[in-house]
Length: 262
Image (tube, rainbow, N blue to C red):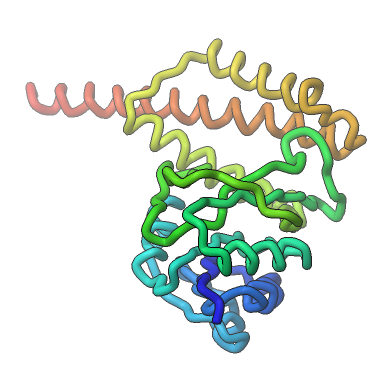
């Protein structure tokens, strides 16, 4: 019997969830869906395909969702997948081998992204390596957005890769753009991070340059170049939202002070 639970976070993922669950079941003792309030058929399809579904209200905190999942994992190992990721045959075999040998390690996997129907090899969505397989008791997650695991075990790389079927439309991209930049700005504001218009622009410009030239986004053709420009606007927007939070908060404080003295 497999010693691993596959955890998937969902919100309105009916297009992908059946395939993701069926793929995950090839290695998992249990597929655990942490849903944050889907209004489509995500939950129904997940359960029909043999997954266990638990609910946690969305509070703009990806790490909290992942940590919540750990409360429901009964196996020695936990593997995290996104709701638009599919493991290839080599990775499936590698996961099985890792949990059967039961070494105290954490494992990263190679991730290849497909956006707007094109597999990308460079730039912002170039193939990367993400830690995903852990001893259940040895991991927790931090950061509300672009969350990352904290685990002290030795890190090794699994063979194979996961294919990440990311953005299908610009409407979807813009929705995530708005969501992620807002979460980042609110978290940065809470942690008293500050910015100016100049530093916002410089962060965005150097991010664009890194994606276009250093990470060779230009080699992915027209779509690759466009995504590098969009990375510029993503970075700029998150800093502008942070500046706006300080501006509106200052106005609120002035208003409250004036009200107190009147």
